[in-house]
Image (cartoon, rainbow, N blue to C red; front, side):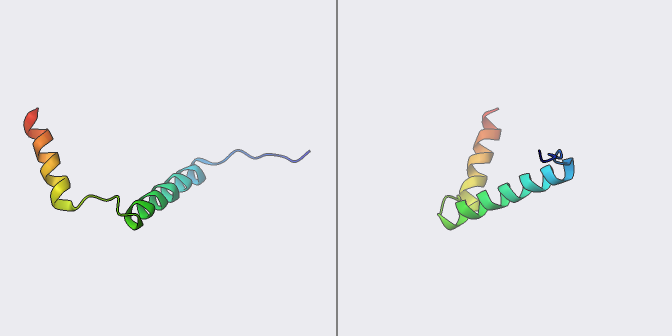
Length: 50
C-alpha cells in the first residue's frame, strides 16, 4: 500500500495561487473582466450608499 503524505501548507498555498491566476487568465481571455473605470464607479457608488 502506498504511503500518502499530507500536502504541506506551502504547497497548498501555491496551488491556491495557481488556481487564482488560471481563473483570472480564463476570465481575461473570455472577456469577463470589467473595465477599470466601470469597476471604480460601481465601487464608489457602493461606498457612498453606506
